[in-house]
Amino acid sequence: MTTATATEVQNNFGRFLQSAIDGNEIVILKNGKEVARLVSHKSAVSYLTDSLVGVLSGDYDEKQLRAERYEKQ
Image 1 (tube, rainbow, N blue to C red):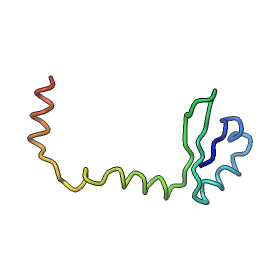
Image 2 (cartoon, one colour):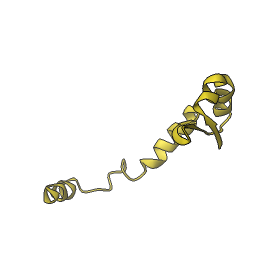
Image 3 (cartoon, rainbow, N blue to C red):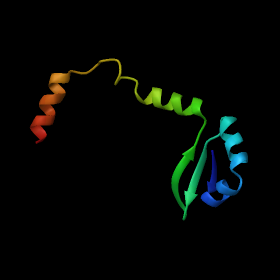
């Protein structure tokens, strides 16, 4: 993982883009705070797919979830 300021990324976008394509993750900072990450499309799809495991498999009870939401209100 590489960390760079927004200005560095703006001034050297091609270099950071190639780094992301090569599989590296670039954390972009603005005023010392993390504001974005630059990752390859393949990495992003993999991350999103991994985060949805269990949600898409239908291992939930829709009626029970709806009842829980009503109870909260």
